[in-house]
Amino acid sequence: MNDLMVSVSGIRGIYGVSLTAARALTFAANFGIFCKREKIVVGRDSRTTGPALLQAVTSGLMSVGCDVIDLGIVPTPTTLLAVKNLNAAGGLCLTASHNPPEWNALKLIGANGMFLFPEVAEEFISEMRREPVWSDWRHIGYLTSDNTAVQTHIDKILSLPYLDLEAIRKRNFKVVIDSVNGAGGLISPILLKKLGCEVIELNSEPTGIFSHPAEPLNQNLTALEEAVKKSGADIGFATDPDVDRLSIVSEKGNCIGEEYTVVLAELFVLPKQKGDIVVNLSSSMLSDYIAAQFGVQVHRTKVGEINVGKKMLEIQSPIGGEGNGGVICPAVNYARDALTGMALVLGFLAEQKVPLSEIVNSLPHYYTYKDKISSSPDRIEAIMQKASTCFDGLQLDTQDGIKASGDNFWVHIRKSGTEPVIRIYVESDDYDKSKKLCRETIGKLTSDLS
Ligand code: MG
Image (cartoon, rainbow, N blue to C red; front, side, top):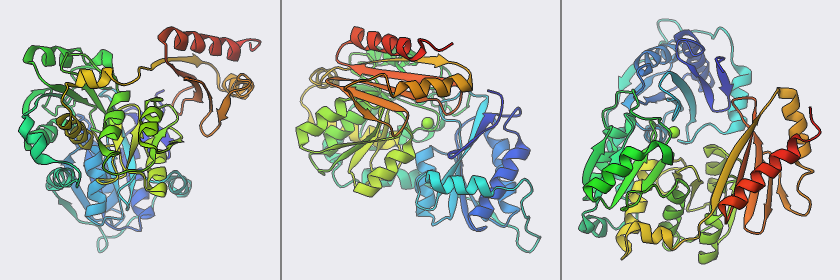
């Protein structure tokens, strides 16, 4: 776990242990060369290692001739959008998303304002050199900063053609926002105030010292639940440190579950812009329920924002994302964006006559159960081989591990990309059924394997 992880999304590690300034500098220099030594945009989250990492990355990029535009502390979706808006050749996000504060990462962005497509990233990684070819004093790059990216991002969200700003403002929603001391504290309250909300801020200081575990899972959001209850707010929002995942607390002060974020966005957008939904293989069956209501299809992709975004681009889907609270609304950008998610959810709430908890109660309830098998790499391969033979008579999808679907349930078995672990996800219409199915699956996968 202490090794530097290199993947199609970039590099990730514990700062000063596996992810050192020197490694980051060389990696960034190689990326600059891959981007033809042209203009590169860099944005970071609030981690304490961010400024040092930024210096290293900037030095690497400039030293191979790239002009660098530093956006400062901004959400990941803001950086993605800025790469496109500023006509840059590429970009880097300095963020380890919801990982603990000692982690950091460099994530690779293409000129189209999306994360690098996996096949392009593979090409880059295979070309990477230990010692890049440096530029001389005549060809060294310039560094500038740009503090307009946040405003541009907000403006783009507020100009969504189907967002009725007046209707939202008229409701004067009381909103609690928990930014977990990430980049969100600098932008989410501004957006919410522009939407006429009365805003109560939790953990808005972008210190990078997260006041609770940074992943916006129900168990990490008890302070937000309390604050919603205590203040009588209409809704609570929680974002992860780089603001691409959004979780929601209802007016009752209860987390509604991350899976409902994309679902509420679908319910808002589809009546205004009909088209097929794209979500990943592990996202809830709720999207199938919504799609059936609107007479559209659900396309499922491998887990990972870029896979979903790429498919959305290909089929011109109006709305989709990942069930972990990652809303992708192409009218803003083909990227997961918690800020856009907030605007869409408030837009939907403004149209409804009932509070959020009633909307959620009117939707079907599905229950996920997750577990994992930790094992040696060899045994993991053997288990994955076996997985395809475990589901007689069920519909199988092999895009990303094995997903077996039946009537009102599915089981998804996939290898972790970051540790020697197989993850098993189950969703069904009954909690006990999901748990039982998960246990049975693990039993089948591990029987007669030593
Ligand atoms: Mg994130």
